[in-house]
Length: 212
Ligand code: DX5
Ligand code: ZN
Image (cartoon, rainbow, N blue to C red; front, side, top):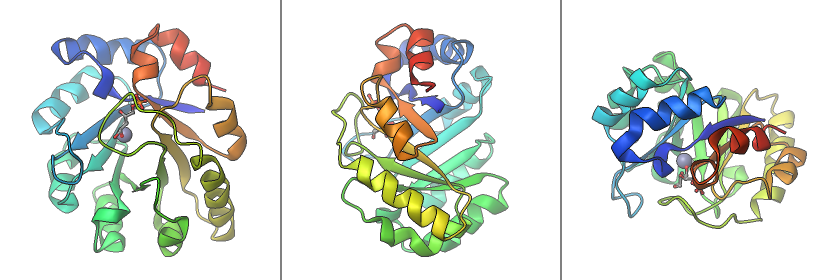
C-alpha cells in the first residue's frame, strides 16, 4: 500500500519540520489538499505554500484540487513538478480535455469522486487516467469519519479498470486508519491518504501500520 499523508493535519506554523518528518518517516507521497472556499466550504493551500512544501519534501507531491476553476489551478501548480494532479469530476465540464492538459505538462492525471458520485460517470475516461481517487468522507475537512460504502465502490471500480484495460491506480482519501486499512487493501486499493491518523500519532508507526 502506498501512503500519502495529508499535510492538512500538519502544524502550519512548523510546516517545513512536519514535511521533513513525514518524508523521513517513510511516506511515499505528500498529499496536498487545495481548497478554494467555493467548491468546498474551506480554504487551504495556495502556490506560495506549495512552493515551500516542494522545497522541504524529498517525496513526490500528490495534489488534490477541490476548486471551481481546475484549469487555472493546474497552471498554477504545474511548475512545482507534482507527481499527480487530481480534480473532482463533479466540478469539471471538460474532464477529457483537462486530463490531456495535465498529461501534456508531464504530470500524472487523476480524477476524484465524491461519496455520492457513480463510478459509471468516469467509464469513458478510465483508459486515459493514471489515478482514480475515491473520497471516503465529504471533501473539505480533515478528521471526519470514514464512510464505509466506499468499500463496494472500490470493488466496482477495480472491475471497471480491468474491463477497460486501464492502468489507473486506486486511491482512497478520508478517515483512513489502522482500523480500515486491511479492508481497503482487500477491496483493491493501491494508495491511501491519511491526515489526522498520521499527525496525531507517531508518524513512523502510523505510516508503517498503513503499509499492508
Ligand atoms: C478532505 C481531504 C483529505 C483530508 C484527510 O477534503 O481531501 O485529504 O485531509 O484527512 P483525514 O485522514 O483526517 O480524514
Ligand atoms: Zn485530499
